[in-house]
Image 1 (cartoon, helix red, strand yellow):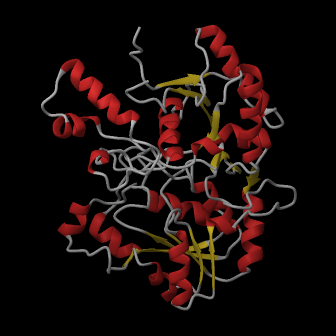
Image 2 (spheres, helix red, strand yellow; image 1 turned 90 degrees about the vertical axis):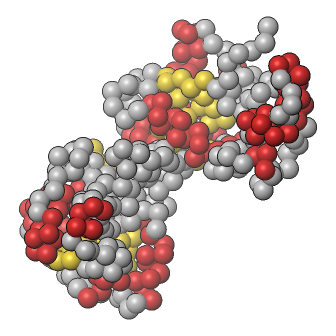
Image 3 (cartoon, rainbow, N blue to C red; image 1 turned 60 degrees about the vertical axis):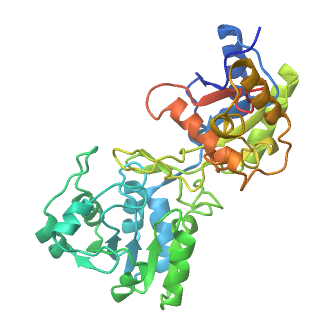
Length: 397
C-alpha cells in the first residue's frame, strides 16, 4: 500500500532531569520506551532533538548574580559602563542585568526603540510617527521618552520594561541613566566602556564602537566564559543563551555538546541498527506575526548536531512543476511525471533553479530545530526530547 504520511514530529516525555544525570542514557531510554509504548519503529535519518535546557541542567551549567558581578567588575573596575541593546525579558536578560549592575557603580542603559532586537516593543511605529521621531537618528533621554510616550506596558507581560530595568539596577546600589537610540555609537557620549547585549548583531556593534573610539567593549559572549569560583561557564557564548533559574541564578547555554549528540547517535545505532541523526536545539528561528516577536533569543538554534544535518534542503517546488512544466498533465500521468523529475534531480544544488523557487533556503538545523521547539513548547508539556521522522522523505518515497 502507498504510504500516505510524510513528516511526523513526536514529543517524547522524559524524567525531570537534574544536575549530574546521564543525559545520553536518559534520551536513549526515553525514545526507546516511547517506541514500545506507542508502537512506532525507527528508520535511517530519523532525527532526535534534545532541548538545550536539559543538557545544561544535567551538566550543572549555572552561574549566580555574584559570579556575573565579579566577572564584570574584573573587566571594568569602577568605570561607568554603557549597557546597550538588551532584549526586554524577565527570563532572558533581567537576571544578567542584575549581575552586571551588581558589579558596577554606574550604568548608562541604552535601549533600542521602538523594539528590541527580537521584536519586543517599547512603543509602536505609529507612536513614533505621531511625535515625528526618527528612530535611526534621534537619541531620547528618559524624560523626553516619558513626555512623548508615557508609561507603556508590554502587550504580553504587562511590564513597563523601562521602569522594571531601572528599578532592578538601582536595587543593587548601582546608579543608572537611561537613553534610547539605535546607533550603538550614541552611547559613547555617555560612556567609553560598553557592554553590548545584542545577540545576532554583536560582532558588527563591537566593530563600530571600537572604530568610533570606545576604550573597552565586551559582548555578552565575553562574560562568564570561564568559571568564577567554581561556577558554570560557556567558553563560546558566555551569557548568551542563558535563562533565569532562580532570583539569584541563571542556567547558561550548554557546553561540550558535540560529544553528547555523538554518544546518543552511537547508542541508538547499537539499539536499533539505524543511522539516526541527533541535534541539541534551543530557540526556533521564526517570527510571530501578531506579537512581532522573533523567537531566536539564543545565539544559535543548534549548538551541536550530527554530520547528516549539515547543509540546506535541496527540494523542488511541486506546485511550480504542476503549474508550469506539467501543466497539461493530470491524474496518474501528472504524478508519474513529477515523481520522475524528483528522482532525477540529483544532488547538485538547486539554488537559482526556478523549479525550486519558494522552497525554504535555510539550514536544516534551523528548520528542524524550529520544528522541535514548536513541538516541545516552553511550558508544562514535559517533552524535552523530540523525534522527527520522515523529514528527509519526498513525494516519491
